[in-house]
Image (cartoon, rainbow, N blue to C red; front, top):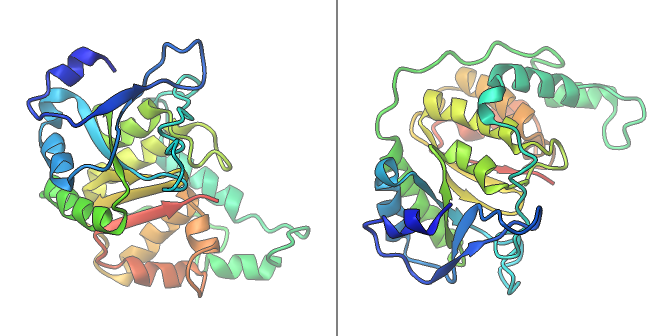
Length: 270
C-alpha cells in the first residue's frame, strides 16, 4: 500500500498509520490502521468507493481490546510474504482435501472415538458431499455487508478501521498477511480462494477480522435444511472448530439448522 492510494480517497480518513509487517527487512506495509474506533458509516462509504480506490475496508478486532498494541494489527503480526496467490488454488479441491483430513478416524484421538467422530459429520461421515450448485448472480451483496457491519460494530465497538490494497475482501485476507487459521494451514491464500468462491456463489463479503476470527455477510444464504447441510459441510472443511467447539449439539446437522437464512457467517480457529 502507498500513501498515494490513501491520498486519492474522496473520503477523509481519521488519524491512523501504516503498519509494518514483523517479517522481512521492515519495508512491507500491508495495512493502514486507524488509531481508534471510527463510525461504522465510514466503513460503508469506503466500501462504496472500493471499485475506484482499490482499497478494501475491514473492521478489525483485537485479540484483547485492553491491549495497547491492538494485536495482531497494531503490533505488525502480519505475514504477507510467505503467502501464495489465491488464484493458485481450486476451492473445491481444497475443501475436499480438508474434509478428508478432518474426518479421519484415529484410535489415538483423546477427544472423540471413531464412532463419535463420524457422528459429528453425519449423514456424510467421511464421504465428501457434492457441493452446492452455483447460485444465479447475487444482488445486494454490498448492501447486506453494510447492514451486517453495523451489527458487528454494535457488538464490537472497540473495532478499528483497516484498509488493504485488494480487489475483493477475500484477497484482502492474504494481502494483509492475516494468519488466523495458521494452526490448520499457514497459507492464508487457500482460505482466500474459498471465500472468493463464496463471494460469487452466496454474495458473501468480508466485513470483519479478528486474531483468529473471520466475519462474513451473506446476501444469499441457504434457504432450507437440505441446502444448509451441504453448506455446513463446506464450513466444517473450512473451519472445523465451528462445529467441534461450537454450541451443543456439536454436529453438522445442528449447525446446518442454525445457518438456514442467516445473513452472516462467523468462523473461529483455535
